[in-house]
Length: 547
View 1 (spheres, rainbow, N blue to C red):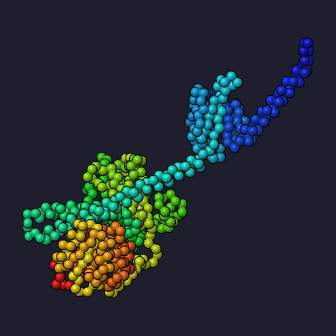
View 2 (cartoon, helix red, strand yellow; view 1 turned 90 degrees about the vertical axis):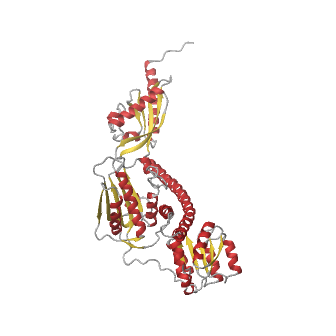
View 3 (cartoon, helix red, strand yellow; view 1 turned 180 degrees about the vertical axis):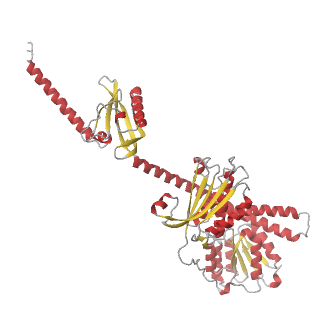
């Protein structure tokens, strides 16, 4: 049974119905893509836009309801460089037939300026699978990327801080052990010098040993400085006066051809800190700057020092490293026109033992010590540098509070802490046998009888058994099992009037304060063992017992 042909009107009606259906599908599709919160577009094989959703039209600067159809990237508000990059990406996708996800690129967006966008593009195929264009979508990731970079920078700072803490802990341990070795060497050297007649042939060799020992002492002091959490002696300090004093020494120690200039703000406020440590900051920064000027063949090498006052608001302190509070700061600036630093070097300049100098030209501790001192003074340090363009270091120190600065008042020592005038039996406790031997020799020269312990627990037991057998205690501060302060506490609980002297490789304000509060007679620096023991002898032994 044959089908009767449709009338022309029936065919036309059928086409109209199909066209209406397609229009509804197209409107549905357009409504669906317009509902997407991100820009979406599709282009033909020539990178000409065939369509896009509402978000893309708005980002392209078109009015509401506008269409990008028939336009190219050159017709939109992108820069020529951006338009060329977009077309190149389109062609790579269509040629390879593979998608390109996560293309991070800049794009000028209407009303937002230059933004960072993450674009995804895929090949657009017809029903036969042939590539006929490209479809893409993107999102503005400017804030997300900024947060990612900030987090990455924070993670890197934490990593560097953990790394530096580990190195500082290592350096502190090395300094403690080396301090004991150095103290024994220098004290025994002094005893040998005292035993030799004047003009002995070995005197010159002993003098060389002493000079090497003093150099080692300075290195130990730098290692110890890495662990400092606060200045040793707090007092009002004129930063300008420190710079003037340091510049006099610097002129004699840096190459004569390096011009050194200073500019100090008149009537600059003072800071609260340790003048000796701040002097070390200036010296270290300026010596580094002077050395940097020698790395380039300049005819005018120069180092500039400036001291100025600066008010820092919340926004200013936020961009600086550290945890500064808004307020008034003294800024020490040290600038040079030397070789400058590349990015890799800048990441490591505050690492202990890192140096760009040749072997023997530096310990790599200078800037680590500077950073430790500045942090201990509740300040911070920033720098700018570039290869061939020199370096500028800025140290920010908080000004002293208005009004007189009163250092913490130490607790009054007990009147009974001064020993009787007949000290003869001394207990010496140190976990290093070499220190025990040399201290014994020094005390015996003064006519003392000495009992030594290398284990503080045994010393505690001896005190408990015979608390009145000793006239003086010499205790190492840092010992295993029982610290010097803990042993002193036990001893004073048994005999409150017993004179106690603490010996340590690092004397700071906290230790002095604790010692005075407990009523200890003295805190001695192990690095200057001979001078300190002599001072103890003069203070506690009768005149006839002096050497």
